[in-house]
Image (cartoon, rainbow, N blue to C red; front, side, top):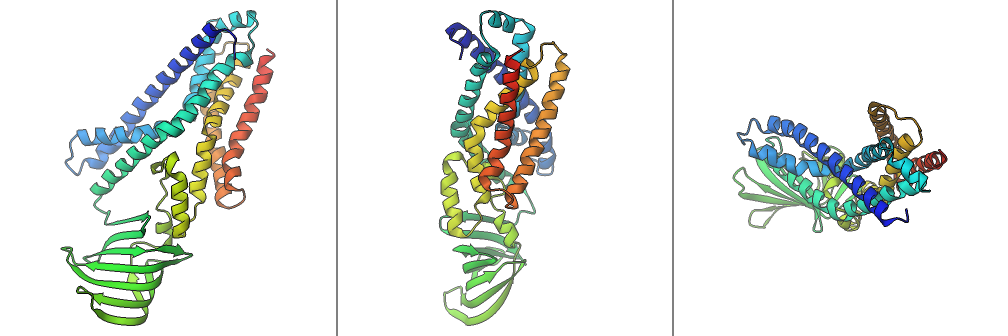
Length: 363
């Protein structure tokens, strides 16, 4: 950190201003592009224009949260380019301030922003994402089923053969739902009967229920000790295990609770644990992107055209995206541990950027 409070304050103010400007630019672009998608989705529902606007407002904050590392990359390039082209960096170097000292200020701010986003903004975006999905589901004609995992078990609601079904199970064991209860209703939601089974093989859409007892609407036993009963569902094991495919609906403060809940229900917690590790590593990810922006700009003594830096930022973003995606794939196939698949790309970027900054400091 630079000893001068005035310089620290100036650099902090300039960097935060640039971060805010780029965030607003991406917010407006994201809002505009998503608005067209929402209008196209709701055009058949006579919903008016206010609902698509509302839906875009719910969607874009989470988008900004997910792309914030790249916002930091662009902000860093813009910031260092600015102080470089205005020769402010030369004045600071003349005063004995090194490149590393200069980069410390936005670096510390990036870490603080990372912690703030994970602990404060992330929970807000998760709530907005949940609201977004719930509204979207309520308007989908083909959405005749719904499944969720709660503290009371696994619940499935579906429409099938002009009847409504509510299915409850205590847990999952490999391809089986354990302690299954199926409540059957007619199309007018009048209760018809209840089916209870010790377990159900849900490997495919044709479930195979074992040790079944059937009760009528009054609770009287119709049939019992049925060894095998088939039930055609809209869900199989893969669909049920993908209930948490959108992890953006889970906030940082609820991750441990969700992991415990999924473990109790027999779900794989690998993706949820990966999300927790990504949350822990997020501040370091922002710092590594800031350092990378310093490598692009401070590492050269020439003043290239702005398009050069934009091109470098785009190439770096694409490479980092695919590198992260490749690492995640290794984690899903158990080639790497969950921790390694999340931290490895960030540590490599951080080491590469740090070495580049050290070289830039000698210029």
